Image (tube, rainbow, N blue to C red; front, side):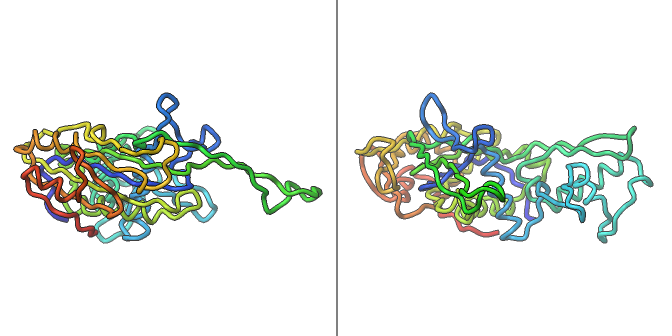
Length: 331
């Protein structure tokens, strides 16, 4: 594990989806989440964190704490049982919790989870522990990496359709079942995040962990190939690293707009608009003395404009006069 991070970082991540549902609401028939006041598409931070976790576990073979594990009878572990998976010696041998005080049990589990589980180092966790009915406690870590709810940069149009199922509703029926579905013809979504160097000291978040986070954001989004998510494409990942401790600009997501000759709900592709980064560049320029580096990864189909001028993102960023570098995905 590399050195624990010492400086604050802000993140912007933009991706799009065509003919899909980026985050269904289980309380509303799994329809896409929509802000009723603005008509903008919403995606929860929990959805993005799940994307990252699944990618790191399934593709990069990283251990994560928050995952579904069933016993031989098909019963799913609760958090207390999951925590006891980490009650073990350095050799991997399990420890009998009845033979140690709960304080020692807590210390062993905590150390092992932080050592092994990248998702707890990134996102934190609240983990209940129970030795017996009279000895209970918990482990709490505030995650250094926090995201706001993602929001599309335009109003979206929800398409509803019905279809015929493959099977009958019961064995005596002569008709097939019907299914109903809601999806978005297009949504261009922006997430904003912060990496807090102070919380990183608690979870021992390292720079190599952050490398995996960036990989998980970009490639996790691209590799989330389910029926409702297939076609998600990462478009921009921006990382602003600061020199000054306990400082960040904030609100970077609200400094981006799109310009299009189409109405919002007519947009169907990233080529239908330009991403206006004028306010973002101006704000970064105002605070350039506090910025160590700006890193970026961009899809070449995105068209950027700054003060009405269309150019490559790299050239726009270079105008600030700070150290600019591309992100190399590695984990």
